[in-house]
Structure formats: structure tokens, C-alpha cells
Length: 211
Image 1 (cartoon, rainbow, N blue to C red):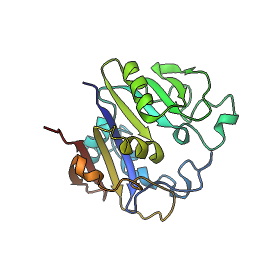
Image 2: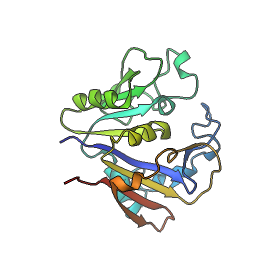
Image 3: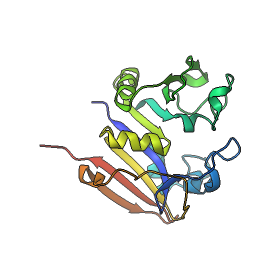
């Protein structure tokens, strides 16, 4: 059975997954890359990196994934829809290597990239996007890649089976929070926490099986 998964999704101590304002020069706003330094130090990201607990969690990101869903804010900076040549942040060979569905109110024709990534643009609700991605995943799992608004909408709709969050010991104070409107979410999941010497805490949410 195909699962819907989130991996390596970093948040601050006060629950923000990105800062503000976002732009082409600052994709995460005033947060910069502080939310992701833990991952940049791992072997998953850099062959010279560490192989400890952070790496063990990070490398689960790609196992068994057949499709990805992301929001417009992950695909590009504000206003990218007005640039017909914009093909994402990642160059000619994006790291997804699967069908990748971008949720946007201004769809455009699909873009086939190198390495097996094809970007498809959808203006549909979360459940319909997931159904489309599951068909494309051909029995493998679907990864929800972010940003926080998309993650929050899929959680609110009860569509997430497994979620790996990384709480980073910084306070951002402003930006886009993940938890707003999700009161009581913990009741639907078994939650485990693992602390790392890097200072981050890995939080794993696994949907409870209803008897």
C-alpha cells in the first residue's frame, strides 16, 4: 500500500519552517540556511559529512519514493509564474528523479527535466493532487516536499501517514508556521523523539492504526 510521507522537514523552536520575506536571493527569508545546517553536515548531503544519527534520518528521504508533491513557494520565488523560462531552483537535473507535482493557482504545461524528473502543475485540492501522484508513483510512496503551507494542508486533510520533522534550536519569530490550525494533531499519531549531538531533535510521526 502506498504511503504519503514527509522527510527532513526542518522547523524552528517556535514552529516556523521558513522566514520572511522570501525572494530569489533569499528562498527562506531571514532564516537563511539556518534551518538546514544539520543536513548539510551529513554524508547524505556531502560525501565528506558525518555518518551519525542526523545522517541516518536524512538518508531515508528518498527510499521507496515514486512521486513528489510540492507547493508553488518551493518551486520558485514569488512571481515565478510570470517567468515562462523558470524551471525551478535545481538546474537541469533536479534531485527528485520522479514525477513531481507543483500546486499552483496558475498551472502551465509540464516540464521534462534530466534524470527522470518531470514537473507537472496542478490547481486542485490536496486529496485530488495526492490521488494523481499515487497513480504516477506506480505503487511506491508519495513524498510531500513542502513548503509549510502545503504540509499543513495535507495534515489538516488527514492525508499524511509518516512525517519526519527536525526541530532546530533557533527562534525565528516570524515567517510561515506549520502548526497553526492543527490542534490535537498528536492524537492521530505515535510520536518518537531522538536528540542529536548536533543540537537538533528528530520527531517522527507515524499514523496510528485504527482497529
